[in-house]
Amino acid sequence: MFKFSKRTAAPAAPEFEHSVMSNAANSSQAANDIQRELIRVAFQDTVRATGVPPQWLDCAVRYIKTGKHEERVQIQIVMKQWSGHLLRYSLAFQNELMHCLDRYEPGVDHSQHEWLWRYAVDCESPFPGMPPPEMWTQKQNPVRADAPPPRPASPTTAHLAARLTEVPAAAVAPVAAAVRADKDFELRDIFSDLRSDTLHASGSTPLSASY
Picture 1 (cartoon, rainbow, N blue to C red):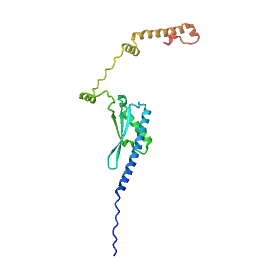
Picture 2 (tube, rainbow, N blue to C red; picture 1 turned 90 degrees about the vertical axis):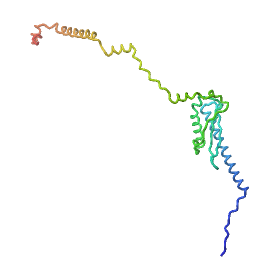
Picture 3 (tube, rainbow, N blue to C red; picture 1 turned 60 degrees about the vertical axis):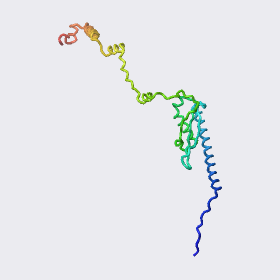
Picture 4 (cartoon, helix red, strand yellow; picture 1 turned 135 degrees about the vertical axis):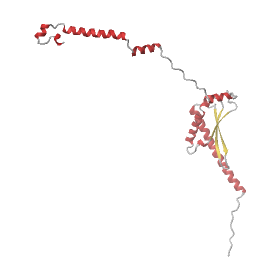
């Protein structure tokens, strides 16, 4: 029987392994450089679109290794000049920048990037020190003021309301008497020309007989 020896792969030359790793590193570095430049362009476009003064902010991109062949993109928005008004809209600015990157790279989930804000050493913040600890307790449990009592109605408004809803009896009596006087006058005026002989001639019953 013939015995065939098992063939084993020849070990790769150290020079070849070094060349492959070097090429992979160069390729990864080139991809990172392209992405870093793309992020900076998106940042400049967002600053221009939102109207933020360009000297207030800057952008830096870092790549943090999370494994042997994995890394995470870290986007740092640097505040070079202090602005409390800008800080109020910091999250809105960050979202605008993220939406801009989504338009440039539709296939990348930019929400998975690490986003952070940092401050330049010379940003000249007007709050160099922390306030007393009691201030945070007051902010956490604000004292709610009682609701103010309802305002009383003005005398003029109350007087007008009373006059609209209630008519005095003294004012009603003369009006009713005037109406009755007018009615009696109209009846007397109608029957003033009627005489008893006229009523008998017409065959009508005298008015007094009907009562």
